[in-house]
Image 1 (tube, rainbow, N blue to C red):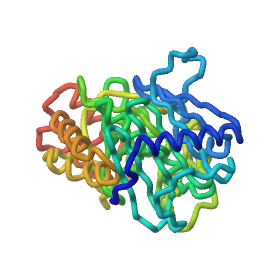
Image 2: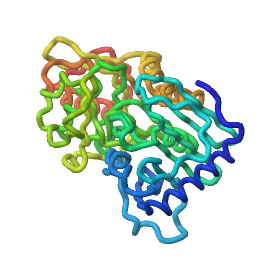
Image 3: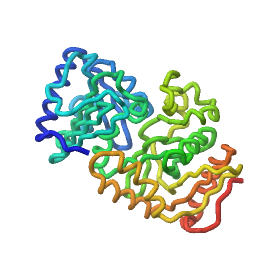
Length: 369
């Protein structure tokens, strides 16, 4: 990952001026969101990017009436593109390409001002922690890929929540007010299948892609995005999701993206105490079972996708992940072919943990009844 720009704060100020000019040209659109105790205001220059960049956050949208003039003290994120506003960037010290296959990335952090640019996506993210101001720029709404629609502002949220003691985890989460589980693993492990199978159960849904975890005073999960992604080959197993399809003409080979709000609004939960970490594995058998695994295996499952994919503060994020893993039990979720057994097995595990806090260290498998 290359380092960029000699003066991050000066560059951020230049971008803020570009955004102001874009607002003068296209008008201002504002949306407010609440994630845990954190308020976020997103300001758009025009409306071209509003749908693509807020649909996955719709379940945590808040009313502007919740904040009176002069009282907003959260993160302000200013978003614009050059195509719809007609405003190019005054400075652009990067090499842009149109191929989404390009993986070249630039990152810099000078005194709490983060700058990140990724080729292919050609998205620029800047966050100045000192004044709580962030900028997000893309050349055009047409260049936003499906995985950015699924998890918008990911690097910015990584820096912001990281500065508040949280950590973003690449994983799904289900549970209830008494507690729940985080499911994480590499692609093809069955994470999304396991999480989405819980939509037809008593368990509530906190996320499939990324979630926010707080470490103090106790490990706690906060819902971040309402998106879910499935391999096309698994789509037929969840016909109830068809009404939440992002769009029907996704590029061949891409995962299918679903935006679950508002269709499944009653299934969402804003937060819950974390009681266990599950590492899914797809099995060819009918039944679903869980068995305990060592905390080191959970760290190996979390770190590659949660830490390496996000720029900056990696040692801090890794430290918080290992702290969380030490404080809650970890299990292998051996997912069977009968989808209804998956939520039942998770519910049975949560009941055991509530009744016996040391359940995570017992060797026998837990099966649904």
